[in-house]
Length: 470
Image 1 (spheres, one colour):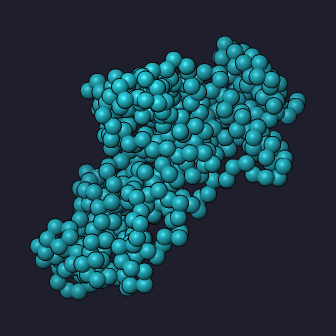
Image 2 (image 1 turned 60 degrees about the vertical axis):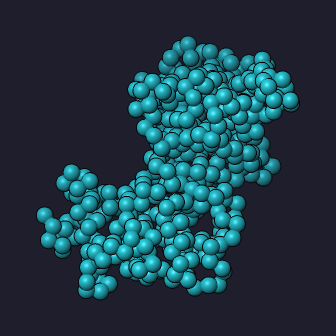
């Protein structure tokens, strides 16, 4: 392919151009964005590999000129320092195919070039090499319309379009497994394995063998060679669930496997290439663990390229009615065909083999019950909501009433606190409680409280006035 390398740092520009030329590509170099425009005017290129921050014309402006002009089919790979990752993410939105975080080895560009080349060859044969990203898949699988969940969907879409490592952060039960699955399924690696490692499930002495495999005779009981998860995920995605549970002593080897894309099996000396995309998840504050000396800072920065913060259910209670409806359909077996192929539901736990309620059995929830659900803290998040609804449906014979539900989420005394006056009184009471909670959580900042509830500030103020709140 014909490649243009653009970087104001001479050493990086020259060495990268030389290494790509050694791979058989035709390579031209430019010292900044303005010179790159001149080169592009003089002839077409298949790929532009450009730095982000440059004098005269930076990488973002160069990208815009390429994608908004007659050279829009030219692929752009962005090079950026860690501190500029948000800008690099913006570059992906503007049409860059991916970005690389400096410092990186020149050979790290090769898989991206191979991916571009395969795509071009497939296009020439009129057969798409990869399933295109499906915004509909993201929208229908991730349930929620609140502002915080819209941000999650947006980040999932960005993560699916790039090969950058992803860190999913959220409490137990928020659906981290589901997001990892969606990202892989909509990425260019979707035709290759998706391999999950529950890092908390293995004792420290076994995690190395699980990740990298072992050679025959490498330790007592190793009677044959065994492939590790990096082997099994070749070409696809390796999902490290609860990555903070990887022992500190094992973190340098994991860093090397991620950074240099190479590892050795336990008891072996031959290096093995690791063409995998890493998605990691944690429910703990990794920066705090770095301060405690239990997690490596360099490993954190390799994992935390694209971070997706998944809110707890208590911070998006306006999604609860829609989420409840979705989960009830799933529990009743009415939406299984729509979710075929998923390894986890919106709850983040495996789908049941059989629906909890036989198909065709009525499945209803009374409006007052939804209000009661909105008043619970949900420490177990969506997973807890799923199991609560499942139990309530079984106990109520397919009809969830406040009496049945109160016993499932804290006892009948909660139901006693519901105000008298019928359905509208209950709704008004719940709305007022949500407004007060949002104000308290935002320290009295009305703009922030409105944003947390997904409301316009003017709407939020009107509702405060309606309920006589300051």
